[in-house]
Length: 603
Image 1 (cartoon, helix red, strand yellow):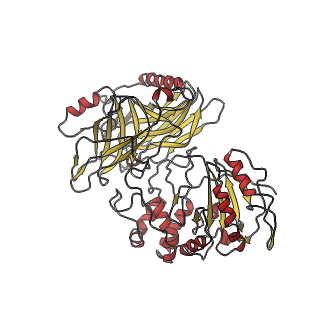
Image 2: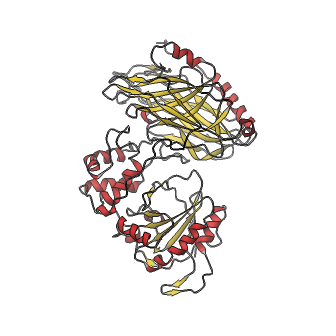
Image 3: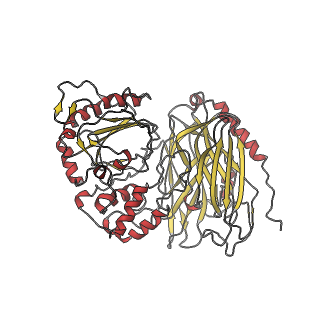
């Protein structure tokens, strides 16, 4: 029997019967996964639960195993009771909306699928050869297909057997991946809102309204469909042309979009409350555990009730006894109603302290950048972000005696607000001297920019580009595009020697309010000689709703609100620390050679 080779990059996440949340759309830990479709009624599926429990106990490191219940007519409560009665010791995903079944397309229950770390289906079929056919069970099981496939995938091998015929209860296409019909809030919509929206849309968070129950969802139903169909929400501006997946990617699948739209079209039906998932439990306090060091804005900052958004920079001394590598930062806004995003710069020169001392209020205002040349950076935070550690003991260099300069974007809420945010720092638990001797541990930044900006009033498609050629082999860990309010789109590509061009990030519709720091799910190895190209478009017409001038005015390069920029930062590491350092200094030299012609005063 032939096996079709195909990959699955899931565009959705899943809730288990116990309320646990599994990010199937993410695989930055590069685990292999096994999915077994089960049933509450099929006797063969029931008989395999003890065997699946046994396999679960011996799962190799870096492997996940899930049962899936997607049969129609079974409520969540019924499924919870069934698998509790059978003492299932592995997570059961409740796939009532058929997101998983319509992707993997099982033909029977039980039927197993094993996906390797790259998402390739390396095995599908029977759990073992315990059943010759329906009603004929073997006394001795000789071939443990699922267990052997899991072991192979965990070590990067192909299983000896890639496909077998499953024996069990037959699933017709209509039952295993039916068309969307009779959508209900309890079964279909509540899980989407919990997984995709409630991180922000719940009480005391930054979103303007909550979506935690049926009445709240029904009240805002039409708006939910409007903003999701237009890909405004969940906020995620990289487009599908990007060749590599990002950590924390927020993107609704087409089926989820259809479920939301059909629910509204069918009258926002509540459905059977027995299908409702348990309320999610959001992490309180530090998501990554107690930080190694907590730093805080020295003074509270008052945000006025109205007026334009503010970009305020706060200087925070970092008291550490020796140089460190920072594996992660966790930003805690002091007032979630007004803090939109934050960028964390480092300064070992004292320049930020001078800027702060020159202003009477806490911190100092500056738009676009921190107002000085940073000695480094520790990333950033934006609404909905999840704190994550860099992989494999990677970290960003933090020099003893440096100041952390936190640039916070505030938006007024209609009343006077006060903020005093704090940041948790997580260090790599090894001496820096030892880490710098190991490959791919130090993470540094380079950037590309075009400083020649002269955008005529009314110009809707003003184009700028810039290029840079890597002098050494590097590993790209992340990317941070940056433009101001006239930004329209940006695409960053890489052309390695003797390889086709690949898209590092594509942002078809730029939104200044949702810029982010993007980590690649799997870092990208780039050879010396790789040519990186940035192509950007700016819109200075009256049709741009973000245009700060009405009527439009001529705009040149600068750091003020009404100026414009084209920057893109890249987070890099390398197998050789000296190659990374060489690349950083080469990039600095390249940037110094870029034209900085002052066009702001020319007619």
